[in-house]
Length: 357
Image (cartoon, rainbow, N blue to C red):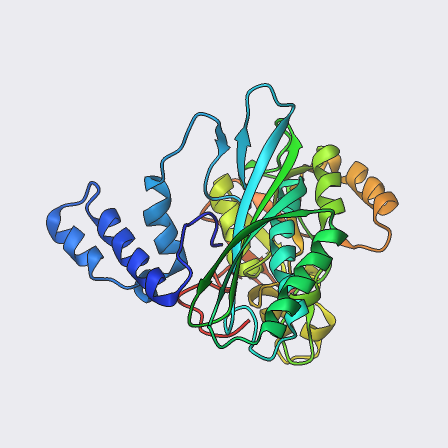
């Protein structure tokens, strides 16, 4: 999940920043012995979710911040404007989100598409992009040109302006993209709106985004039109994009909404790449980088949603995969003809998952 944390560009800087954050977190409202114990931990000990739980409550806010850290975008309201403003930021880092041999244009495209997907998950329209480039001094200029060619093509496709950014030298190639968008005032769809009885939907198919021979994590299409449709028609009660996998991202929506869920294993749509594996459901739950929309719909709007979706998106599936439960402790995965099993948190989590994306 990774949102809105001012993590520095280089590995050394990130480690230093994280260490400082752990110390600050440790000494806020904790006895000294517990503080010292917490301060000695590493990011591998606490994971991404633990880091966020420690840092997010410390971040200062202002009255014009409608939604702060914890959603796909922050939402800011400017006095006199008919729109709310959406802000998001995402890094794309070599050997974490792409490999050294990945074509530069695709890396540039992915960097922009990730920010666009965040805005789509709020139901908004992306407008402006800022890009920070971090690169080793030995990087061929041709590769940098390829990165920017990919970003420029993506910006033109989604009608974005690239306003500039900054450059710095680092150990590996990195792109840090900040996206700004807008949505009609009060119209953002948040993660926190799911209610008991709501139906859980997902667009497209899940799993296998970075399996050998699959380039989905580089070529995915952000669900901009679908996100705007759900927001404008007021059909989605909660929404987010799937970047870290259903097993990682769905619990974040549930935590924000303070709800539980019953997922139907047989209903989860499997990608072609996932179906070719021995454990297709595992890939659908845990691989991540699907960048599909996960959203909830009130049961009273089910028929209206189905009819409107079919007219608007005849080639894009939206499959009901479960139901929201009132009890936040009840989170289960049901298999046909068998008992429901606890839904284990999985998917990709920074500092705990060790693989290139």
